[in-house]
Image 1 (cartoon, rainbow, N blue to C red):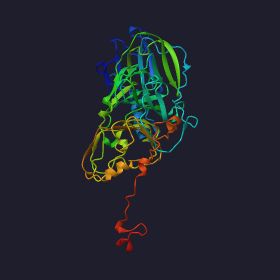
Image 2 (image 1 turned 180 degrees about the vertical axis):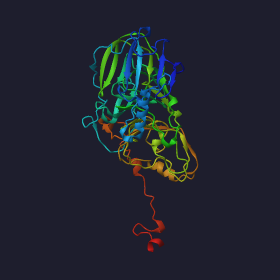
Image 3 (image 1 turned 90 degrees about the vertical axis):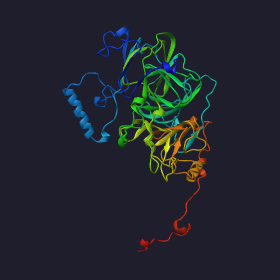
Image 4 (image 1 turned 120 degrees about the vertical axis):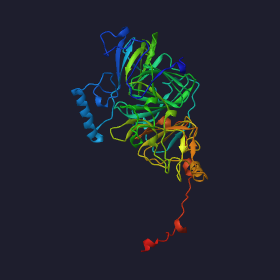
Length: 493
């Protein structure tokens, strides 16, 4: 098993990278020569359509700058897009990667349906899920010691919206695994996985190389990549969001300017690594339309000797996030803590945002500093990686989760509210530390899986945390509830 210090990474989000495990394995000047160096096979993995506009392309080129009519055409296209109405531009980036491998991935037996994984959902309708506006909360699930569960078998859907077949929507899963994946790899044809480990590190082998991901970090496995997950610390659990039809990207910074939030250079992608071994009966588990299929082959899929492109897995250490906060009064909106976003065709409206609530200073004066009471057109699924969440004094535990759907009221519990308004030092600067919570926020209304509603981990008394909120209302000028306050002099005139 690779140790952390043995792993090397490439820095940057959206960059075009190249990596060789064996020098001289990448072709020079073209992608698919008649015979590739070292007798390798060339294979392309595309994460967007071939015709995605180059003006929105993330790729960079090594050729020297020269003026050409094609360059002028692209410059004019950019200008026209900047003048067009904002809702006419779909901010999608062209993403692909060329792999140079010992054997191509097509070398496998036919796919067959895998025995039903009853708790994975890719189509969110009345036949698979239920709608409820009720505030929901779950205690952290125990990682079972038996039966053996790897990442695939330990993965289960909690809620989601839309359809993996229609390429629009999202799913929110959780996982609880007690064994490493052995003799198999997982491939998600439905969308990107954003994995948030809460307990136990994940050693992830991908076709690009290896990554070690610890609690407090996240990892994104883009659509179509084959990967395997080992558990170097034993049992592991965490959270997964999945998006259909688009990819994650950094949010716009707007008036924040050029710096802050998540810096592109802090995102790390693996370097090329391969194994050349015979693996009779090796299984590829393919997630397709929310269902699982398997195919066998006689070699490891991690046989990529070299690769180049901008469609790569990546990880990010959440402690590198540079948060912004109110420095005078009032509580900022949680959108200011967005790490990654998946956009829709409506400007400012996300299919899914990944937002964190990290350690930070609270300094606002004469302000209720915890999150305010709220009803929201977005829907919010929250998880807690460690510590205590600032708006919930009790009941919201690391490894647990909550769901507050569209226009369902939510906010601080009774204990948090009463403790906050009675603090004698409420105006003193305070460093919030020892906590890391996150939120998956979407414009689409989630439907909830029935096993999540019936789960023994569900906190059926969650609503009680607000029932104790009492009225602090008092009438001005000593008026009672039955008599209005006296009119002012201006009103009398």
